[in-house]
Length: 258
Image (cartoon, rainbow, N blue to C red; front, side, top):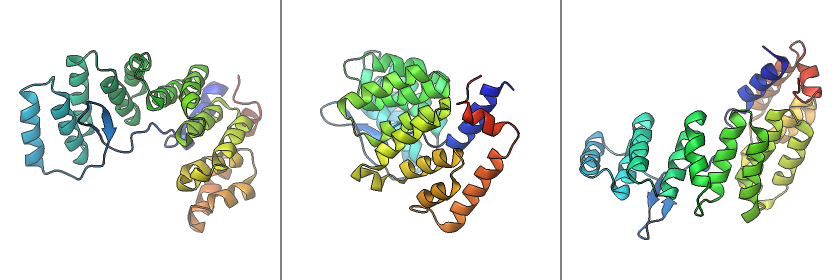
């Protein structure tokens, strides 16, 4: 494997769960027709089937479609849920918010290649918000398109310069590219914000980036703020083992370029 490709694979294995797309909660339509977020409780299979029948009678009905998609998510039917979103987008081609939601769901499911064209369409709309820009940036990063990714994060931060989700993704974008110093600076900036206390992933990503630079004691100190000692020890042991592999230090010191 080429040096750059091997470096990317190492980082991606460690950061696969660090990119945030703003899809932690199920999304619905409020009475004004806007898509908002709300948590859902698991539905019975019978209830889900009944919701599906109601939606199938009129697949263009976004309200019923989203309710059905939310219910499918609650019982773990992600692939079927995405199929419902795909059909809703097809029958509602002018609904940019729906396209953005579908793209974010695809990104959260790890289907970056499918998510990109959907999110690009949503991002071109006047209705695009930071969630769309951030999700598009995260899938660009997964494809190694770092400059394009950071252009999207810049758009997201223009409206909310202290958005932790976007700052996290920006920091990990630098890490995936191999620019660990800039990744650390970005994540430290995010961690310094009062709101970061409620987002432990920021500190864990910072610990990862610090550890990747060989500063294991400092990385352990950061990780202990949110993790139990045994888990911190296991994480650091794994990180040291990974970094002991031939050529890994050289790849990191050269910023993953090659």
